[in-house]
Image (tube, rainbow over all chains, first blue to last red; front, side):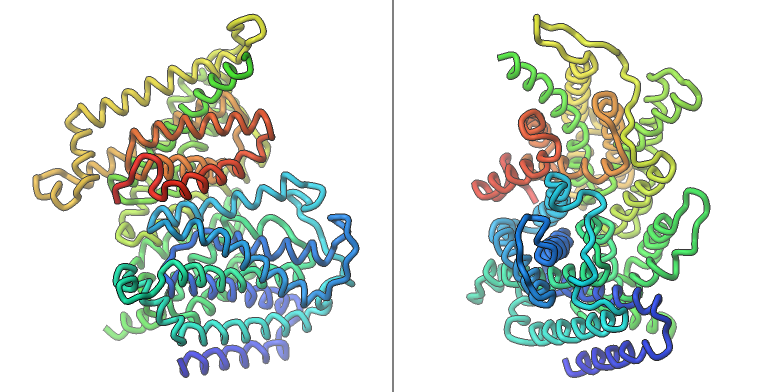
Length: 319
Length: 285
């Protein structure tokens, strides 16, 4: 626990020094990567700790994003509200958590593969609202939020806000993972029957895990919107979900810091380092997916398990 | 009255197509415990290949469909190959198949564009069944074709030696190995058959509706709904559930519009899960 907090502080200090020698254009992408990394860590909380393979985490990212966007541009639903952006971000997280509570109560009765299948459908279903009520949600293109209505306008302010958000949420997640609550989550992950026989109310804690992780996912979605000034259905979509799963698994499920780091790395790889690659119909996304499949095939044991990926590489090198 | 007959006929056609997809998905899971998120790839690629072959080489629609299905089988084998090293880990299988599906979606998107496309139907024109009751001939033909294929699948699984081996493997992998069944061959046969069925479903679907790249993932919504209703690994359960989903799909489309079909599907799933958490037709893990 203490070493993880130390790692978090080290990472935060390093990231807070970056603006000194990084141009704003790159800083903008790194800030988005930080927010994405929080989403990955929040997914780790439900999967790596509570052991529920939730494939629909982007449902709550998207819900948070659209909630914040609507609250900040209330004219789209014909209302006249004045809500401070920070408050709308918190409300977005709360709304995601409430929806997660409702969904969780129903679908957490399912086990194993059935749970994964139902959650996999969720984002695709929730995404449809964007196309059904095109006038409100803006359809395929989404809609933009005027500059005067977002939380911060300057890149450097946004960057530090993202960093602060990361620091506080990861600190809170680390605290939870090490508290009695976290221990119960882990007990459920390791054996539901045994936990039940010990008097742990399994369904209650599973729902709680989904609610907590969705709260952070919703806030992260809202911050994404405030960062980019636009909201679009890509925040619901499957490619984002794949990136989340991948970062968490490669980073090492159940460690929070591993998924956080790997989330940042993979986001930057996709949106920065790989963007110059393009050969005919092979655009950067095709190449990214091809690389990911190759990594997965070549190192199935390297990315599996609850140990941190890097440690295993070091071990392999030593042998 | 006419509306109801139309709904039943159309629903049966769509249900048959869904059944071709879902039974394959269920079969693969039953035998190898792989959740194949790339199953929609076979569905979409066979249709796109046939469209491409007809447009570029002006092939006959039957020959083009046949080649399309063959390509679907090849892609199915590719999925087998890439999941082989990670099969023991369910999350890795999901990552690999999902990445493969998104990769193929991107390739189709960049080469064909985002516009909906449709395949030349086997039979064109509209059939007048009774005064005002008219339906596109292709929609009517899809019904016997799909049902014949499903019956053939059922016969193959239950009567043939290979089918019995498939059943044995899905019941107990280790025991099947012990009595000398070549499990890897069974995996390959299963995935090839399932991909061919999905490929055929894609051919039929694209002759009735437009097909577009996002179908690769959207078709999974229906496959999952069917599998949850029918029970994972159970072929007959899947086939029955497919027709239920088909009728719900068509009824939603006619009353509320296509965009609502996913919402209604989710409500149906949730409703059934509240009533019966293990799906309609029982479950074996």
